[in-house]
Length: 413
Image (cartoon, rainbow, N blue to C red; front, side, top):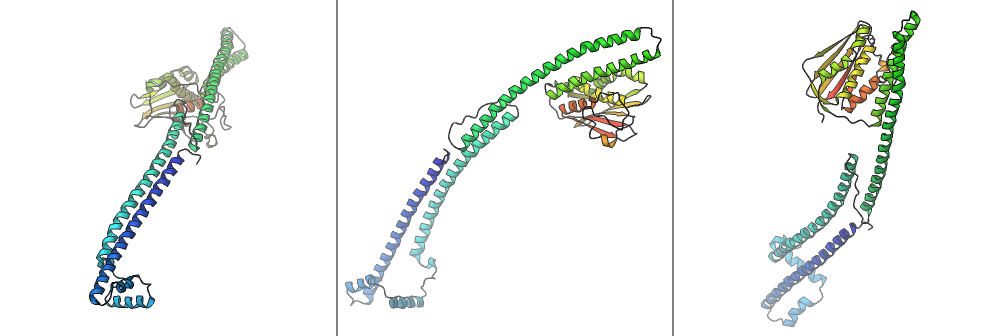
């Protein structure tokens, strides 16, 4: 009874049942009066027949036959007489016209009354349940709307009862979510600014180290050991630069501050750009990269981030291929997917590494390669998932590796 909506519902039911009892009482009284009239008429007819059969009986004597106390022997004698005529308690009601007509009349009346009041009860229950579950559905829609990124509004319910307490709990949750969202936005903004500052702080000394190394390499040095160390120093500086760049990108992706700006892009050209950035390294290491595409393929994506993913897959293939080996890039499409397949002829991936290959900084105990930064594949996987896709691996030890970037066609710009 603490629920405000329940009170009118119960009062309505009580009112309907009370009126129904009164109506059925009136119908019962009316039916009893009709039966009384039928018996009175029947007794009058019997009195007249007795007078005609026995004219010597006075009116008082005939009336006494109907008003005197009944005797068991008279009832038994009467039942025997009527039974001989085929009239007893089991006689079909339809053979008694007056009783049959009365029964049919009141059967219809009682049926209509039951139908009417039953319909009123059902209508009352229906309206109550409709209002109750309509309110619940409204609250559910509000919660789903907020969960899907809609505006954070308040549920306006200031009445009493369980539903109002539920609305108050939802409003409390909304308030808490607003606080957490605002705090999360501040944290992301702080992280973005921190990442930007770190990037600028690291680029300056790193650029200076590159310049010093190039100056020393340009000097005429007759010491073979010094020349070899300068070359290794340059390689390590390049590796450090890639690591810092990838770490900053990974931090931005993990912080959720990246928004994709999708537009139609020719993937053939995007793959050529990724391959072009590795052209010098391929020539230096004596490796070849071949691209296979049946026809030009257009796809809606963020070109800069997808270029990053493809470049990391190509870099991984170059790093795990031996001198003079070949790397193949295939571009295929179906009505549902666009696939970019990068295959190399390197040492392949051991089965024990397959489940950990996309973990940041994971190093296989079966691989002798030490060139990579350890987060290139992690970046590629994250970018693929941001586009609604995924990366699969097909490899056997000693038979190279094939990484496939699967991009769904059913995406929105």
